Length: 453
Image 1 (cartoon, rainbow, N blue to C red):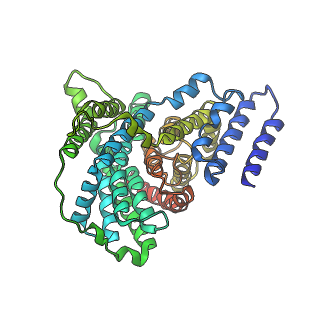
Image 2 (cartoon, rainbow, N blue to C red):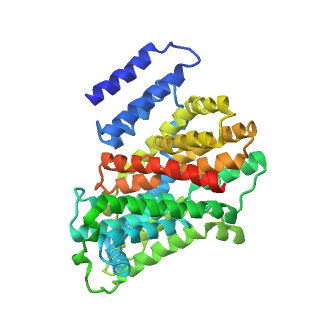
Image 3 (cartoon, helix red, strand yellow):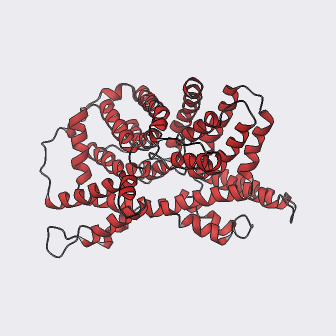
């Protein structure tokens, strides 16, 4: 039924839109986007199949050029995903993630509430210094190891919240620093280039860190409230004797730690040394090394190609589909048209302007990448700010902070997509929890911005 309604609406827009009109591709882009969103929300077909729709619809309808399509599905973040997935695969193969997960439980305690707190804080703190994508890739195997130990499946609230704590912790932690999330750097560079506004690392932290800590606390309280009495339950199976690290585990953790080091200090190393590298390049380097380095057993490597059968290849297609959708909405003027609506409301009070901008930022990021939203929306918001009595930073900073608070859909942010790749979450579980947190995020970002920015 849902599929029929979506297809009927899609075809109606195509047939009712005048051909060769200046707005033809505008409405075609809306039709394709609407069809993909409906199919994603209701899982009419596997979401990875829906992510392939632009291949068969975008070029024939003229809403994307072939070069735009290939750039979307060959985006550099896809290679960051791939390299990170291979690293995670090695952690899983040699049970490194199990060792680390058991260490986390020993540190924070064995109650489910304490484990949630440990994962939210660990993921959030890591994401302040490492990209939220890399952080999610590191923490997900550890969360899955805990769930495997206690044999919890997707029917358990704890299993859902533990997985979501990795996704949400990574996104929220990324708010805290300038390097924590790509949109932060993008906004800073746009404002410096076009308006001469420089935002230092410490200046960003003055706003980002408090907001990040507030959001982490609220997410934890929300999870504990929904968990109820289950939060007091202890995981008895976690009380195991500390195991010694095997030779292969040490080799994998050495490569893993080296990649984390290169991710964490990329800006410092590229500044002081005559080298220049990217996060995705480092991720792929780590993946390659795992196929080179020998294991303890004779004639074996830490990873063999047959191991990659376990990689969630579909998630790479999903990310490409999200990027294609974002590009399609951008170049056909859909995003600009939505942004232009604000030009008529220059005289509105600040709290109403922020409420509208932040709402669009958070919910808009659910259907397009936060990078795409910031790159399109920030110039429009900055231009709008010049026509009002408010500073550019007063309006642009909340929009950028909010762009990291998309909690509903796998395509919303890389951490959401990575956690969804575990196969232990249903899209409606993420959407229900994420919608409430999106609303909370809108209110918190607006109130925080009014008080401190």
